Amino acid sequence: MRLTFLGTGAATPSRTRNVTGLALQFDQRRALWLFDCGEGTQHQILRSPLRLSQLERVFITHLHGDHFFGLLGLLASRSLQEGSDSPVTLYGPAGLDEFMRCALSVSRMRLRYPFTVETVKPGKVYEDDEYAVTCAPLAHGIECYGYAVQEKERPGRFDPERAKALGVPPGPLFGRLKNGATITLPDGRAVDGRALTGPTRPGRRAVVCGDTYVTPNTVALARDADVLVHEATYLHEDKPLADRALHSTAAMAAQAARDANARALILTHISPRYESVTGSRLPELLAEAQALFPNTYLAQDFWAYDVSRRETSP
Image (cartoon, rainbow, N blue to C red):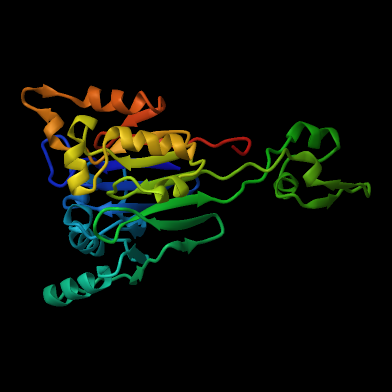
């Protein structure tokens, strides 16, 4: 699993940060998921190694413009690309479906691929054989959600040397044993694949929060997460601004990560007030979070983070 940050700024774009957009890719799966799609996200994708033709799903946290005004242009551009005819599904709060229907109708746009909008409610919003996505409401003065992507358990590591020692020839039989099957060798002996694999490995968990103030739901959603992506619009010294706008400080984000026992925290949605022509205060923002949660990163546009796999459960 790889996270690529396409926009890490707050409500308005700056010269160094676009508004919110985050891409998720998978290890052995040619698929692209987006979390939020602020204005200009399609331009950010063009400047990255990502391929819009691989887009499958877009998860919108809330209907503030800096989180979804880029949808229409992105979907329209995809419709004009050769080989981009696979389905796309949008997930988001009530009102997203109405917005898309109205925009498509007024512009008379006809997407040439299947397109659906799912209105989310707290709980599970998507599941397939490998991943499940759940959401929980956040605190932002408007219907807003955080999303957790949970990878399902993976088989334990296969021991090829033990298999060879038992007389199993490398090849297709190895694949069956890796999946836990029992095979029969030419001499009649049965070999149980489960005896040749280690303990089941836990799936990875990546949590992406929309804009939010302090809420227990963040901690519950991010419990034991491998990575928590959390807004950090303000420094603690500007907490009155965070209180008024229902945003978070870097310290608030770090406290949530610590309380959730997350492995890593990534700060995003950074106010442009901390990057001016007179100097950057980003080191202060990062230091504020690291004082509470050392394994904290501060995202930049186009920065990518690989979510590593655990061998045992937390």
